Structures are given as C-alpha cells and as structure tokens.
Length: 156
Image (tube, rainbow, N blue to C red; front, side):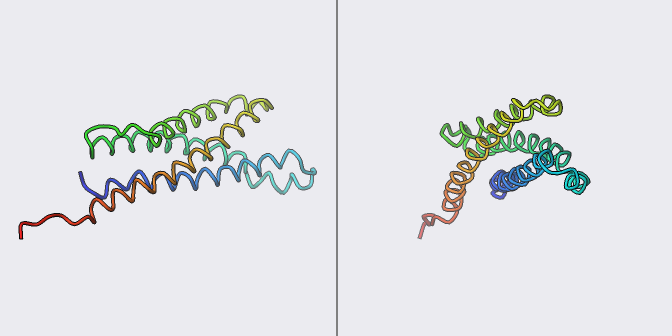
C-alpha cells in the first residue's frame, strides 16, 4: 500500500475535529439568538448561525462515517487485520454518537428542549472522546513514521 495513504485518515480526522469545534461555535451562537433582545435578534438572524450549524452537521456526519470506515480499511490493508484496541472502539463509539445526535434533527427543528439538551450532551461527549482519539492517533502516526525511519539491516 502506498505509504502516504496511511496519513489520509489522520489528516481527515484533524480536519473533522476542527469542523466539530466550529459547528459547536455556530450552535452556541444559534442558541444565543433565542435569548437576546428583538433588536439584537434582527442583527443575528441574517448571519444564519442555525442553518449553517445544521448544514455543517450533515458534513460532519458524512466525514465521521467516511473517516471511521477509511481508518479501518487502511489499517486492514496495512496489517491484514484490524487492530483491536481502544482507538478502534472509541472511534466506533464516536461514530455511533454522531449518528445519534444527527438523528435528533427533526426534534430540534420542532423546538423540543429535551432534544436540544440531549444534542448538546452527546456532542460534548463526542468532543471529549474525539479529542482523546486525536491524541491516541498521534501515537499511531509516530509508530508509522518510526517504522519507516528505523534502519534496516543490510548485507554488508
């Protein structure tokens, strides 16, 4: 397998972490619209925080699933098997939580407070777990790099 393909998953996941943080910011700004004065609301509504948050959520859902499948695929192609461990299980958990939070969309659009609370809670958990994934992924990337940098025995 082409060595550079090993880095598509980590780069995609770091981009995804940035998108998740930005989406959280947009969601926070959208929630503020409900709490401000009518004059402030008139200024904030045209900035479309809520619609941008929802659109980005769909992108995050797709990239999360693509990243999970791609990471497992790259691992299998490189090793001939999946490496069963915390990085795999937490990654699958993150994917499930992203699906769960996306499934709350219809209830969020209806203004259900329970859905909003659950959405925020699940996404907070996603960020904590995904942050851990990013850190544990750095260790995996370092192992990949060291396997290439390790001196090989020559017949001299």
